[in-house]
Image (cartoon, rainbow, N blue to C red; front, side):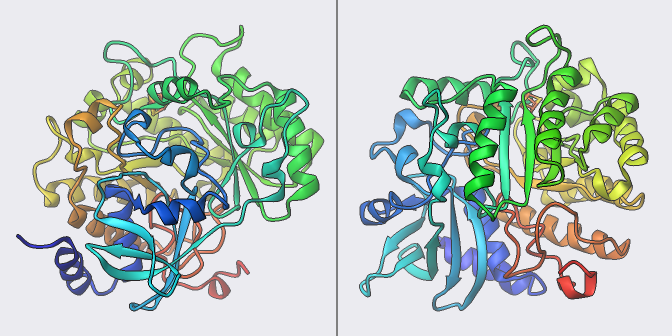
Length: 437
Ligand code: SF4
């Protein structure tokens, strides 16, 4: 049997124009990470996983025997070690059966191993001081306003449920509602609908104590009818509106919601939102219709794309950054059967958007077992797909001479902090050349 390390090393050799760290990062994201008991004990003193929106785990919490959900860190930093890794930030997706393991070496250092061979050193992020605080109601800040991306991004999931759930409604890769249920079951403070007042109270604390966060994202599940008597735009716009009134320009303001009509995007812009993520999830028409059946029925693929282009006219193309979930186009039973077909399809979408100055970004698919596709595809997509997609993204980005997407911090290997895929790690031009320092 060919061992995993041999496979990864073969890809590193074959795609030698990509940073090896990014290839390992993609494999860690699609496979998940296990922790030794000693490493978990150390991790307990650092910034914990907050479950900021989805589970992003390869096993349900009910199957975690050592309470990893409460003890594991939000992210790890790969650095140094026998392969001399440049600093690479990776989101922690728990998988007790993963061949990747965070452990303590004989020299008492934290290390990442693959099949017991040491790959790199590991650092955990210190717990921000404000993580110890609570709101007046007793709710922890980690529920209301956690940070990810090594402290760069405040992640404000103001509605932890999606109204697309039900027969042929939900996006088939998504476990938002199931995750909400499992978190509530564990007794974690996990607020379904956060009030504007809660968000402002939490941000007061963050603003007083924290100087590292540079941006915030307001997001949550889709609202197909009404929530608290409000339509989707009315519900979501109230958060950036209140934040920008209270803390004008303190953070880069981003929202992740459905593709909305032009006049509704203007409302976001007018309250101070700078960056908009109308996520199209998968490019191929047939797969969008199957995998995102609810979105397809309510809005439709053509209209979704038209709205992305309209939003680019409102906010500027570089500030419209639609996400796709890299790998779901290879998911059984309906996905492409070959890496060639999958990469060709997704590259077509990249070219379509990037040729118009819009830079899609992607999240590496985590086949969560509480989602429809995760159940059917526990192995996710092949690593070679992810590696080739990284190359396609970088090459198309370079072909159209686009800048690094704003709102993600510094680009490039050793600098990037975006933790759920490697697109920022593979940007080759350094920040000085982009005038972004
Ligand atoms: S719209 Fe789709 S991806 Fe977004 S929360 Fe709902 S089901 Fe999940």
